[in-house]
Picture 1 (cartoon, rainbow, N blue to C red):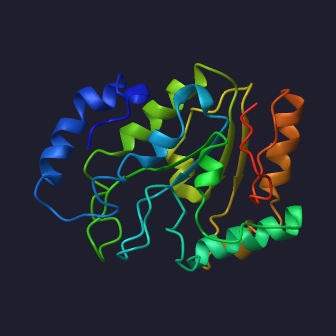
Picture 2 (cartoon, rainbow, N blue to C red):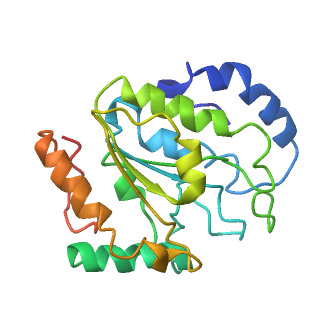
Length: 219
């Protein structure tokens, strides 16, 4: 569970991670030690262009893959992710063929949960362990390199990111895509096309959200 080198200098890893690592030691948790920092491994600070925060990993064994909202290949998209794909279809006319969102991460979309571990079957079980500082530290580090686009889904993400988006950043806030709130402002929000329009204005390549291209441009 070694932090990725590009992020290892963050204050979180000096001050908070040793205590969390000690609590995790010897425990079974999801997504497991090999994937716990996958979001940071796939997206280095100077590659981040878009930020999407989730809450914690899926608590069902075999689902969580270390990326917010993403699931392992072969796993049917959970309801929130299915709603994300529905909105993307309406917005762009296409959506990914699987729930594996690693192609987003490789294009500079930071898919970070505000807690990176969860006990099996216990959603939010590690949410109070001090993980939340990592998301803020990571975003602040990414902001050192360029303006960022924030896709802010729901009150949890809004609170986690409070005060971080700057005037030069793009902040798109809507309801969460969960079945309980998707019809309260998530559907029809069209964040994917808005982000790509903003990236184009920044002189940066658009995100291939649907995974239709063969390469992963970072711009």
